[in-house]
Length: 481
View (cartoon, rainbow, N blue to C red):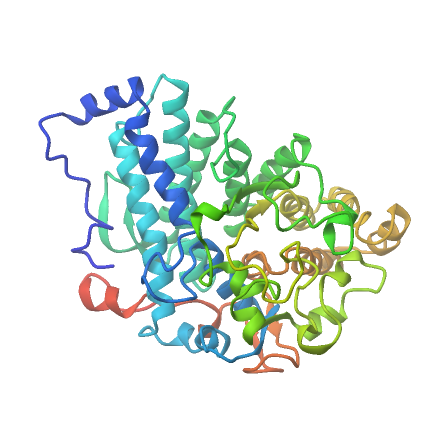
């Protein structure tokens, strides 16, 4: 992205209609802008959407793989084709010339630009549409913009410092090519999400890839957690859990051969946000499933293995249902063959991908509520949330209580962090938890690269670099973060 690209430039209305005219027309006919909003959702899952060619350019789920690798919890345990070696080897994160930095940067800033276009069409940041459908469109556009900036801030800043300049800024009214302080970015994220939540009150979406109130709340809880505002993170996480809209993933859904996987079908009740992949979308080789699932014809099957870190796996007790998510022998040892799988379960069998993509589920907010409570000094509330989650993982309430009740202080916080890493393995959330917990990660023995090495959360290796294209073309940015 450069200061001359349209990522940071204002949307220029070249018609004779004023923005007020357009906003009024959109209120009468929301279809004018709903297509643009749908395009943002589609871009989140677009194969090679940034580069047109790279097989690890997969939208949000592609970023999830990179982040899980940086967290150390996902090991590149076999490297036949090289698509992930620059991140697994911690080269991309210290070398701004690598393509991975450009993919991430461009992906999120394109969402910012597209969101600004929708918001601008509806009258701008202060718009107050009257039609329910137009309210929902504006709300989702603001939530998408917040989502993009939230990830940009987490990925390109080593650790939260509100005063540190971190990113170029564009909200449709202001266009700032130089890096603005993290506080300005997070202020926009939080403001957007608060506005979105209000506008989405009473909105019933048609598809789970659309953002509803609970998804906006989830993003807001993460934003508060990222800046260390744990009281507010807990309030929002509790609102999601206490709404009762999303039950926990059941014991049977946790791992094959249970009652059915909870990780390949968007209709799973615990999923808050996800994408229904259908045959007509024609997702094949270039897809998250192809990179992760042994039963899909692509890289995981053919030799680029993504496995749970041996050290993390060793910390899962034998009575934990989640331990069964991973293979135990042969080429699939420690691969997630019983968590993420095509239901036919034929090695390399799924070619046209119809298994679905998950972005957010309710368990995240049991864990975030527990973490925020523990860090705010409310250990009783933290233990209640943690036990509610672990009861179905550890074989009953008594086992969960035996694990949780003796914990206090740092041991409780550490346990919540560990359970977040186990529960959310392969879903792109461990990296965010690593940053919040200011953790040092040590890689296990099954990483092709840097096995056994340790890295603190704010080291050079743990965050991506502003890409070479931006540094070359934007004279307002003269140094990395």
